[in-house]
Image (cartoon, rainbow, N blue to C red; front, side):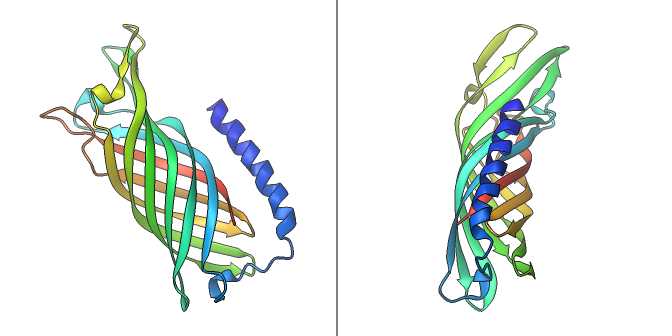
Length: 211
């Protein structure tokens, strides 16, 4: 959590510095013919858990880091509809208790979100952007730690590396600054168990800069 808060403070300071150069820039780009795309950097936090009927796979939320970039392109010059593709490092997992022992699941993913955004021009420099789409994830690494037995093993010995699901939320843009709140609903079964299933759940918030 301290690492996440520190990173978000750094990017907030960076965004404020960049915003000084944007004071006189016209941000009505969503209605212009000469600007049809944007690039962005994102840094944020997951509040992630797993959902399952099996006790060992049903976890309470834990926080994790998100860091990555996005690319957006306008789908139509006549409507403020945008397609946004991203690539991010994303930490998920959860925590629970088994036989009164604390157990944590830490899963790191390379995540590819794909969403469609509708940009609502609230003011000259302020846009609200609800979005809906999905994501695909590939597991990079992680650990399952049992603090009672002092045992630790690779999380992907028990879990599948592939995950995918739906994504929905809303963002807001002011000049170069961007903030969003969303939710990832995992649809893929992430366990290797023949009888039980488990799915990821994640509320996320991120800050960023759009160029």
